[in-house]
Image (cartoon, rainbow, N blue to C red):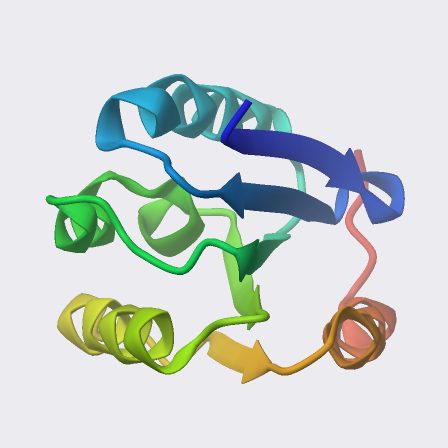
Length: 129
């Protein structure tokens, strides 16, 4: 499967893996699964997007700024990208600028990304739920 999703860190993080080639049609059910999870969450949910095996983005990827619950859901937390090449990083930065959010970071390694998010989670007020 070119796009997968897994809930981690006791429900505080959704971890995505993208493997070339992938299409916008293939990500649609993952977006719906993401939204359904967030609808049930009593606290912010962060996202890690592992793009180390994705060297290209499909046509229409910029539309994710409207479709992705990682950016526009009430529980949207930090969005962390890992393993991006220059092209993917530049397009991702454009998507985030168009989304007018400052809640995203890009890291070279998963270790750096997880260290950052674990600190964010530790500093967050713990939700009742």
